[in-house]
Length: 320
Ligand code: TXA
Ligand code: MG
Image (tube, rainbow, N blue to C red; front, side, top):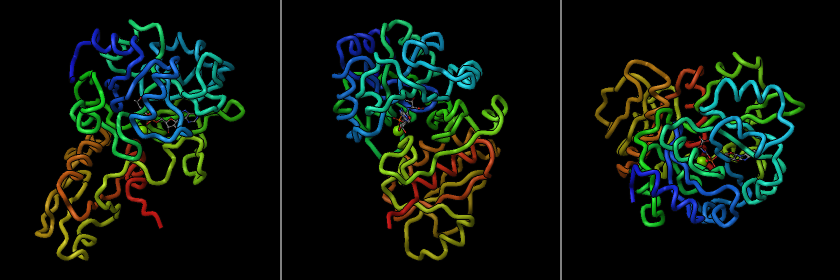
């Protein structure tokens, strides 16, 4: 059931059930983070590998010490600057957090989401919510209640509808090594915004381990089921693909070319935040058109353009 009623959501969560809920980034598949039964339901519903830990959502930064310990100064600075918001901090965990949430790691990923409905819901609960993105493992994240319904309509009793996600791309994940911030996953919080608060930061987003620091780092992820390519010049690439049904994913300008079946322009005015907000919905639409291929153009490598390129590269990576 799609609903705007947080009491219905609250009842389901207090029973140990799981629901979908809105955040400013993407929709989450949420359950009581302190209840292993609810956490298990999240993994099985998503078909998510158990080595891929979940993010714990808390109602405000005041509750951080209940789930995490030994919090570095830089983490405090970032939390103060960006919560509620699209920042996830990976910190040493408190024992109250079940191993199932953290995949047995001694760290926990935490954030305060910035969505009025979900903040209201969290305020009424006496437990934090574990919530990964509400998509089957490996598919595109949902940015509307309708996306979630398409994925899990038959499996979820409650989809809390908070409209379209304002940011549209997942949170940026930051861990700490010797107290210094390290970016594990690029997301809706830009590198420039982070640098402004804590100076230069390092990256650990390209590991090809089987157990990467944050599995958002898995090379192929967020993928449409249609073959997807990321190129500098979409028209000359499309021209080399005669007879194919092609969809274009573009930043600012539509192209005129007979060979193109469909095109998605993410921000006619050239606003990278708007483009980020529209990215996944455009990928969902393109993926439902029975195209032979999706051809995306590279975005400017700054601000959220860097995040968009990162997501597109992961969507296009071909297993060799
Ligand atoms: O914006 C978001 O972050 C959304 C909304 C719902 O909050 N959630 C989200 O969750 O994107 P998910 O499960 O799709 O991605 C969580 C990421 C995974 O890449 C996971 O590996 C990483 O967080 N993660 C969780 N716990 C971790 C830990 N202890 N150490 C390192 N990475 C961790
Ligand atoms: Mg996800």
